[in-house]
Length: 194
Image (cartoon, rainbow, N blue to C red):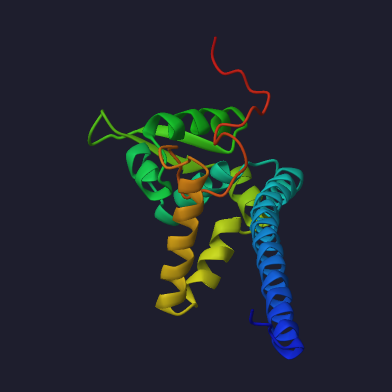
């Protein structure tokens, strides 16, 4: 019968202990990694929510309302279709938001004299004043920072976020590039016509 030397036994025992320690650390890192991902996601959601609340408190607008008003300001006499294309929202959503802004006397709409099928949106004086006081949309600051990254970093972030969306079964959820929490058409107390 062969007997192993005490050195061999100790070495094997030490090796087994190291492997167990590595496995424990590996499991701990995996748990720590997913927790860090969830914390990062929560921070993004929280930052978006806080910005929306700050915007609402300072100027009484939602993120999509601010984007639409800025688009009207930047493009001048503009059709609803052009606004919808620029802010990546449907024409129906833009029309509903314009109804709310018009009710608050921040915008007005005028039918085109050249083509009666077209309606142009304009800012009122009050709308322009509110817009001048409004903070930048959250995504505007993000876009500036994102565009300053190297292309490989941008691609890596995009791929990672697309993968996260897939893992959360969010591939088929329709979303515009507007950073806001909840529906783009938030309940602001306005009931519309009816």
